[in-house]
Length: 226
Image: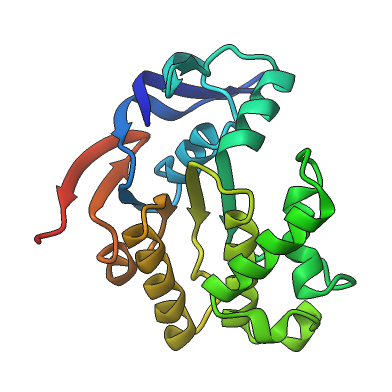
């Protein structure tokens, strides 16, 4: 699905140069569930941002399918991102003035999709993540786990090829965190491709492959035993 070769990301100011990613080689295949781990400052969030086309590499190659992403204009990046990627954030990023179904439908408003089709997709994805009974509620009326389910539904509703999850359980207690991880694992079993950044070894174990980073480099990879 995507391939990074010799990819680096360097941030420069007048006084300091910081290498966030240092010659990273990484392939993500269709249908994988990959967890990225490492200490704070190791580059894992920068890597997720580059994969998500929210940040651009300083050097190296990033191919998404048959598209060379490195060097694309912001407008082209936005088009590729909109057509292929779904995002799940630690902080949920829901709009409290909107209902659950309206928050989910928001992800479709920038696509050329008729209203009737949007409503059908929203209903289907709410049912899939077990939040349909809360369709008319506002986010403030939901538990943390339910809010993250809404965020997952919003990421899924546009039927992206790749889901990127940045610490999706970071703001949840243990039980709700496990609930979200089981849901992500079930989505992967249904065919979703997921790349997740996490600090939790227990949650990383839900993934089929774990990539450990240190100082901007991929240190080691391991696959979960069958």
